[in-house]
Image 1 (cartoon, rainbow, N blue to C red):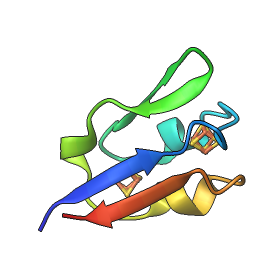
Image 2: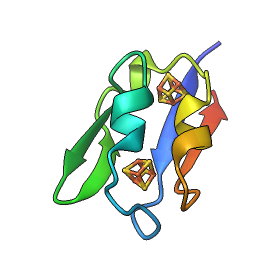
Image 3: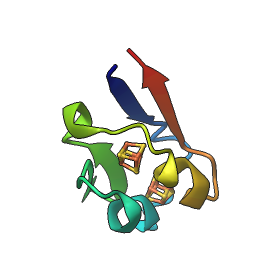
Image 4: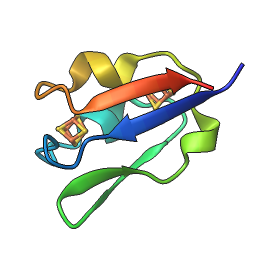
Length: 62
Ligand code: SF4
Ligand code: SF4
């Protein structure tokens, strides 16, 4: 099973909570927005979804 984390740039506020919580360093802040630069490492734990207040992150099962 694999997962694909997606950030809605319109909703992202660049708070870095997802960067801090992700155990496999999927996210990086670029130009004030979170970008899933290591999406293929995602474990599907959904911790990033829990900490993202504006609800900018979705994690798809692929
Ligand atoms: S937790 Fe949400 S709002 Fe904060 S940087 Fe990550 S995607 Fe953006
Ligand atoms: S679901 Fe877990 S492993 Fe995947 S990006 Fe979010 S925090 Fe990282």
